[in-house]
Image (tube, rainbow, N blue to C red; front, side, top):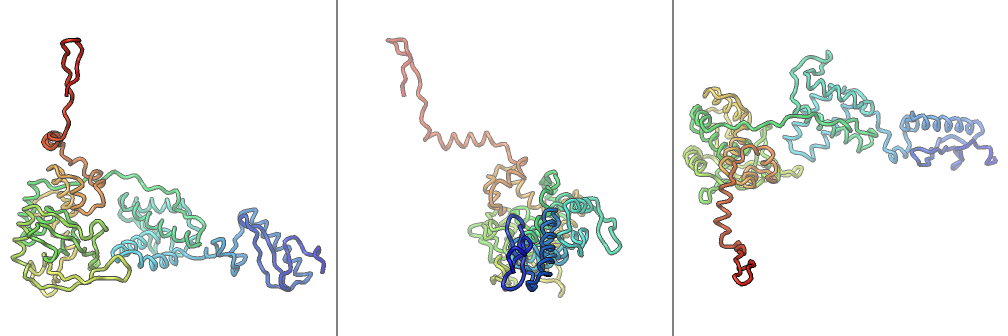
Length: 437
């Protein structure tokens, strides 16, 4: 058989026919697996022509035309038949090894709220940026997906919607990185603009009323310590007497307790094993609390590390024990995070104070400390921030104007070190000024 009898792009390979064509700037070959006969050569030539035409028109689907081709891995195509539901399952399953259980729970919550709006059974490759913008609109205006279609629901805040979109964008980026789609449809969708949420700290008078409204001394101690130290609530309820050093006046933050009922490391690396220096009112609160729980039962607890599957054992005699307030077999030896927030809400209502979220106890510590002139870097280390920048960004309005105090301090500290400025005195002979030191 002469070489000229083969249509363009058709060739013999080991006794069977294959075709070659240019795809994405590269020459590729596909073995058709059919004998080299005159009839098959004509069919192969027609196939090659249709493939080239589809490539020129932009409608060529490599995975549909050659589903078993090894070239699919080279071009990152061939997995476009995955649905959004299948994608979320893969993504969440692999995320388990990267994030803590509490973070995974948040991701699962986002998926439950957003994926039905996109459509669980839709192909990932069919999702467009325009459709995602409408999903964002539905989240903002208050529509949710159900078996009966979209149903009215309460609209979500801009902060929440941005978090939802960012999280799902990560899932679609996973799809792009692993060849399920050629582009992430979230690319180009910018976060919604939002006004910065200003801290809303308690005033001194409100704080006194809040503590007076707490019915049990342990509850008074808990919220007093929260305001005097600024620790996160999960860190507060997992605080143990083994973490407290009365001699040095410090506590060491070693763990956190999550809404899922798990002990983990604190939120960030900067928060882990940080030493919080106690002001005298905080020390007084802890001494009062010691009379109730210092001699309590010591528990061995597993603290989940950031490394997947690894945990460490901590011996803990917890500072705050709910069994002190309510003696009941159903009550555990540690507060639940939600129940702590409930006690704050009840005390606010009982005291007749305008409602604030319980997290404002942390803001109150920061604002009070900065108003008193405390160093922002010190406040950042106390609160577990990686740097003072967040303190400047969030609490700048509460920083005291201490210019006079700073000048007085510099005058006192540098007066013995700063060189004297040379003075000019008249030269009686020349009438010129002479410099003297």
